[in-house]
Amino acid sequence: MKKLFLALFLCFIAPAVASMGVQAAGSYPNSWRSADWSSSGQFPRAQDDSEAAIYVMSARTGGFKGALASHSWIVTKPEDGSYTRYDKVGWGNPIRINGYPPDGRWYSNEPRALLVVRGAEAERLIPKIEAAVAAYPHSARGDYVIWPGPNSNSFVAHVLRAVPELGVALPPEAVGRDYRPFGEFITLSDDWRNLELSLGGYAGLAIGKIHGFEIRLAGLVFGIDVLRPALKLPGFGRIGMPAWEDEQEPRQASANHPAPKIARFGTAVVRSLAG
Picture 1 (spheres, one colour):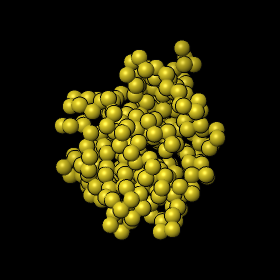
Picture 2 (cartoon, one colour):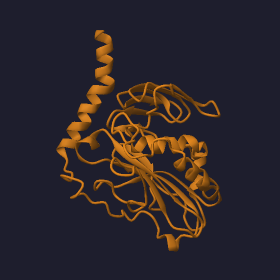
Picture 3 (cartoon, helix red, strand yellow):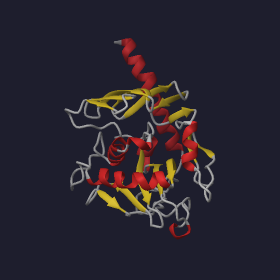
């Protein structure tokens, strides 16, 4: 029991407390009313960008809970079309369409792109994303549970599983991404490369190409990625190499939009939309 408690302390409690200490030392808006929800200016204007595009976005959430959790959403833009942003929120009709600017800040926190897909592949995948959004089983009023889910990250994780061609998972700090209703204990990807076990989002395990090896407890994640060496810690997220493989670079490039640079946001490594 002592060894088990020590392991839990080192892997989960200590990193979470340290992250909360870092958050407490910073400053953040007192409420959602005083927070900045405006565009971060990362996306080109739709009228200036004819290519189809898909963005999987993430930003730290507001208040003290931002020490441990992030919020995620998906943005699509068909060829010669406008942006459509999909979020799940905790009030009113939970599935919001264009409730915020597509590249908007979340509780004043700058968003980052987890994945950008452009061109013909984006045009092909957008209908699949729209179908996954429409089929989400927790879209009625009252279907939002901040912990362990289904919350905003549970919604985006559902879409990503339904469209495996996107080939990306939400970051470790996306609390709620691991939620499954009791009874759905095992999730195995179609290519058999990713296995997830879940006990209603309260505890779980994951192993595979996308997740590496993860132990999940109370929405927090401790893990190791061997293929792209990195450590995953509660609150701090991924520390090490970025989660994206080199062969994904061409998906980011086009004649008008060269492959994005790699940019660092704290301990996380993401692809910048700055170009």
